[in-house]
Length: 129
Image (cartoon, rainbow, N blue to C red; front, side, top):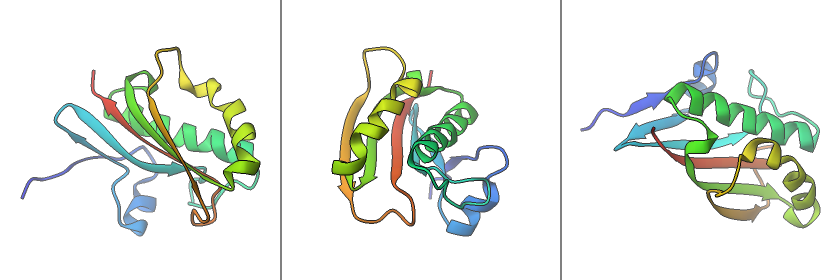
């Protein structure tokens, strides 16, 4: 069995161990990042949508940094939104703060009914520099 090259952001390893998943895996020149939500250090959700989205991006960026890359290295993005008809425009006003310059990564947006108490989740694949 291959040993997974797990990436843990500072101060959050206990959260991932409690929930039994890896925040990111480095493999074959890429970083595969698990879905990141707007959780505080203790795992609880930010209550306001815009704050939750910003925190999800901050959590994502902490993992990317720990892996040795940044959002500029992201090639593929999947976002999940609860009630996208009501939240998409509010979320997409925040995204440019974190997204970077064109050309942008590929994107798949998925509307869902439940995200474990969260309203937004983002997962990415990044190419290691």
